[in-house]
Length: 112
Image (tube, rainbow, N blue to C red; front, side, top):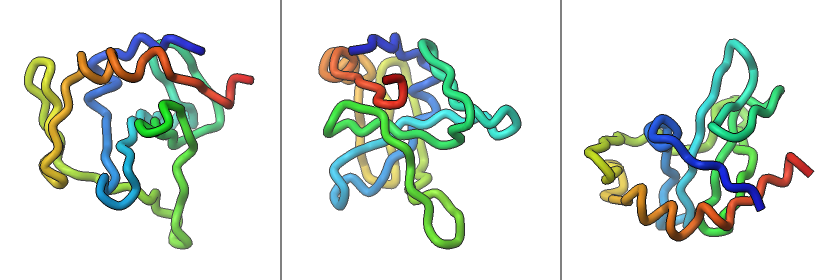
């Protein structure tokens, strides 16, 4: 198990899928110029898009459609203090709740 110590910047880059359909939200931070994903604990080179599966508590690569676009709903995101609101799916999540529920379950299969 890896404790990632999520930063506010990491949460600010959160994107969501249609939660009713797939049952998970994703966290993603990309740096296209460097072609690497970065978060406070790990830098993984060569991976441009990455997701955090809340249901399973692990990081997974994002799939792409035949047109090359990433399959994720880029909804409106607003943040106020500890509260993160996703307007497209009327979803509110508190960073502290996420930490309490999931931070100790995070597994990154790409580090094995």
